[in-house]
Length: 318
Image 1: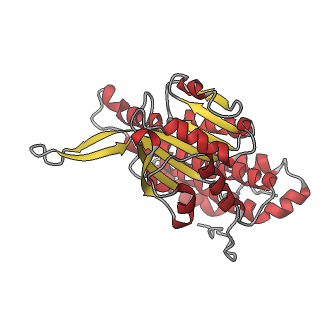
Image 2: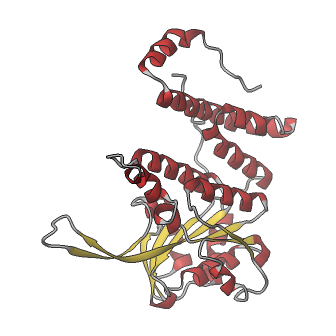
């Protein structure tokens, strides 16, 4: 395997992208709060997008801001791939903060990860395909992490019970409906209750506590403004370069050809700036290709590949 490209450099805090997860039961104030926070993060409401998976319920909030935000509907099936496509469409449209209402469908909705995993059982097979479902989910997470919008993800929540001992079920309280590690992949995450006035922080870095407060009051546009003040205090990068970096990173999982296609559209000046980033993406894309080939190959294919590997030519970025 070639040396991994990790671009070692002095640590400098730049303008980061925020990933915020707000979970709660029906009526807990998730959508309203998310839109208010988003409004504090942008100059005008039209820079906010709402990805609506709730049968157009997002339109009920059309008048809560000082102007219209942008909205798009995602209907079943709620596969990770369809979420990813929707997110990329909002990014292409120039949205700066995307509210996702709700993200729970990706995990447990019609056509989501749970359905993908259990489809073999419906066909009479003996084992669920959680390997395939988790692979799809990882692709969804990759898009969340590497798109260049701020994301506020609303999640449904419900009371859950631990049945490890069937004779002694134990309530574990209200829990978000999502993959078990999802809330901790975020910049910050919380469970909301009391019509939005109370928050239980599941993950809250100390540097963001001044923006989000004690958890005992409403989160408002001021929350979003304070969050952006902290983000903008970092070292600034040309937003065009940031967007290109994001697009190249999201293209890696589809192989080297996707990265090359983006690279070939850049100006000489952009290529000079992005040379280290290009090398990192090239190595990442090649590793994705290697893993994809090995996942499909038979033992005979593996033997042939190992015998020919040294003489195999690779597609090279200029």
